[in-house]
Image (cartoon, rainbow over all chains, first blue to last red; front, side, top):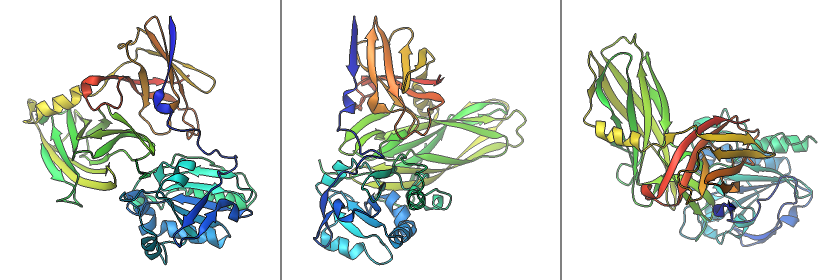
Length: 196
Length: 259
């Protein structure tokens, strides 16, 4: 007698977005209440970042100035940087639009738009698991990098100096006409605080 | 056991750390155990060596005198937790990490001072970092003497999954085939392989088969892995992996080279 048992735990959801495949299209609302679609940015590089301002891993990159520095560098190169907050109301990282506008500005944040995703729709579409978690999308709107912000999976700001920043590396390579040398990595951080 | 509250959040901390040693005195050349225990408040958890889709494993950075070496940590069997953001391997209530301390035969000195800096991430609906400085002293003498914490240390050691090489491993097109040579210890339950290292093998893609009481599993390399891991390290696990009841699960360590 020969029986097969598949692992039921695997069946959470369908396949993740894939490197080389078209990026899942979406329309979301930014912190100023405006509608934002991925298709608005055809022809540009787009970075999508999942964030949660209470997560120690996110704090590592924001309070050190590392994340805003990369945001400033990327947008200075013409890329669009979308920071997504998928925390549910009441969960760590959730902010109302007015709170977001007060926080995501100045030296703290140098991205293009903050997308509010309290229902987790965008997070589930991209199957975001951690904060931070990063995607780099090319001008043809294909996913070219997905994974962690860098190769040092820790919450210690002291690890930033010796880390390879995968997002900066991928954008640099793509903008130079090269293939992305590390197109995928394990994202690390806090779990995305979706609602139940 | 010496309990030390998380340094940053003395009153509100959902986690405390403590250290215990098996002996108050050992001889030069002996090995003894040190246990670092993390106790969490209800519903909070800390992570296994492979945290899964999020989180991070606790770490202890040891400062030891010359002539003393440490191996570990060894973890007990974690609970598998699934939620909207993925799968994690973690511990609720408490985690005891076991370290083995080896004192060289030529050790010079009257005592061994163990100093460790523990860091962890503790999560519930939010995640908080924590840290603590831990310290213990063990004398060097002619005869070993157990410590008042020796029973607690012994219990932590006995709670570790037992090591087994009673498995066969062979290569497949995109993964590893794992077989249990002498028949699964719990042929009435579906086994799982829990990889103990991040991004080595994909916990979610495994499929198990049974034939004449022998369990065979196909485990794929994790999609985030940049190369096929050289060793298959982790737990073969029978029972309900999401149960918090240790009696409801059975696991053995495996650590074998991959083909």
